[in-house]
Image (cartoon, rainbow, N blue to C red; front, side, top):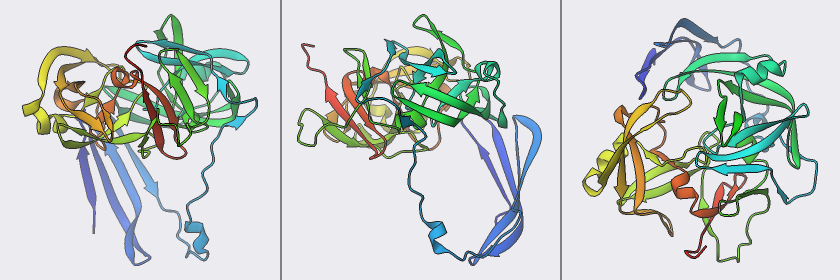
Amino acid sequence: MLRQVQTRDYDGVIAVDRFSGYVDICGKPIPTRVDHSDSLSSQTYRTVLVRHERLTDRHLLAIPQSKTPFAQQDRMPATLNSLFGQSGILIRVDIQGNPYWFQLDSGAANVTLDRDLVARLGGHEFGEFSGTKGGPVEFSSAVVPRLDIGPIYARNLVVSVINHDFVRQGVHVVGLLGCDFIASRPVFIDFRTQTVMLSNTPASADSRWTSVQTPLQSCRPAIRARLENQPATLLLDLGAPDTIINEDLYDRIAASVHEIDTTRVSFIGGQVLDATQYAVPNASVGALTFGPLLTTVIAGGRGQDLDNDGFLGLNVLDKYRLVMDYRHQRVYFQKYAAAQ
């Protein structure tokens, strides 16, 4: 019977979960109490199973029908107010009648607001916890009464809260538009014309587009790629300027890649991390070829996820028109012609 699990992530944070008070549920021992602690905080969090009732309706185990939090209020397809730059794509968001700029980020699992903005809006944080992403990050949640983005809106939207107020492309960026927004409608992106639209998916007979299956991983689209004939699961990350692969993937392809330069990167944790850039001669996803692919490997693997092999950033994605269809877990790619 499992009593304790200890883990250590790429940032060196040690977390311990202790299990106790086991009861029999459906023939399996289940702990009624879990005590969690980690090296980031002196506090211990306890989760207790209050009660267990025998299931009388098997339909309660059925997967609920998907429901997106955004509703339509105007005609579509519709072009969104956007700004394009080297750091990514910014989208105008209206909250309580005031305009703000958010970054379009397919690497974010939900909509995220800056902590100071939440306070100015009169919001209240709940569910606080500490985490790491290239440095320590304080996470929490809040509820926004109404949020408008072009032709769609959401009421009483639960958002993530972090410290996130940066100047990009000459404006303050105070949030991230992740899964809840992108999943609301297919999102069309044209980097050449600097256009973002809430649109429809391409017709199946339109041979200009290549459809790639992108199963959602924590509500983030992932692709099954091959780098130097090695399998790799990579997130599609519109919020990342560069493509980054994890150290274990690099170790498998190291004999075939070429070192280009050293660099420095940072994530939402804010720490500047040393990294090295490499050229990967052969990289592909189905019929799409990305090689030679410029990738970055962070020293010590800091700031990286443990459940994937890295992510494709804008240095790859901006070579294509894209349609992101979260509902059907697909992304459509249309490569720009060389003359464009």
